[in-house]
Length: 275
Image (tube, rainbow, N blue to C red; front, side, top):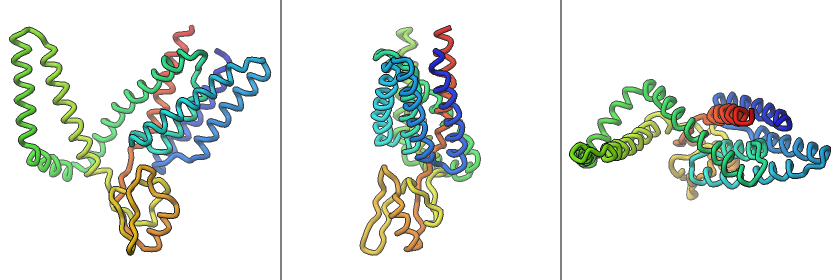
């Protein structure tokens, strides 16, 4: 267990820096993410060479490769921004993998904890955004209700029907299933409203940074800059600045704090398991 103390301390410091940077600038620098990978693998290599135990290095290397695959999966699914995905890469070299089973148990467990913390955090964070934009939020709720009246009435009827069936059959699974369906619909609409009201903003080209997500395509003369999962490149930002354009971008939730929380909780659970 002692061989992981340096890795855990390293990751904790890096995650604190990433969290501060994410809140301040809404991005995590490449040097921060890639230096975490470099330091973690370098430490594993020196430790393995000194104690002639190359499994310690190889399990870390495979951990990075597996988390690179997961990071790209979440990135292209637009769950993570680029900085978040690269932060996940680095943690693949830090987590205490000591067998192939650990990739599923520890790696999978970390991702599940990360998403659980992320879901709660996102709901709380978005609630504060809604409070700060409550007038527009109320207007948008009214529009959603008006536009989806048929779906809302149908959903309410379905929940009532399932509740009635559950009471008749004395099976509360019908009730829980109805509540679950309702929550999925409500959370989906809530997230869409938050995104539209609080996270899509018109920004002057001079304030753009690499990786910002365009909400819609932008026409410059006869050419187009397309909205992409990769975000804006430096060359595209230069073109927009020369054209003195204002563009609609979609801001993300500063998510690095969830990595920090999931890592601290994960280390605590892992340490308790080994005590």
